[in-house]
Image (tube, rainbow, N blue to C red; front, top):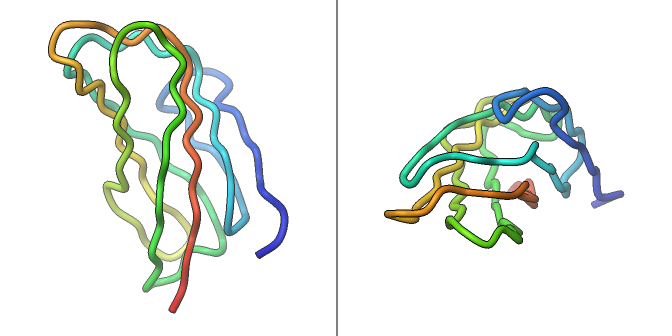
Length: 105
């Protein structure tokens, strides 16, 4: 599978990242989304094929809010991650680390 690719968003939570690997970690900027807030960003990854299975897990060390990460869509060479603060009353207050794996049949 190779090395784990680690990338960090630099300017905003919607900044696209390039992460060419089967396994990786994307660190977001500090998140301050309100309760139920959502945003998306694109990951360029040459290992994503037409029939890929992309899995996500999230690390969030904030004291308020709850982060959920899902694959919104994917195409050959990229995928879109949708992040939602699923907490009904509290805003996010920290960065998140989104771990991904790209699996093929």
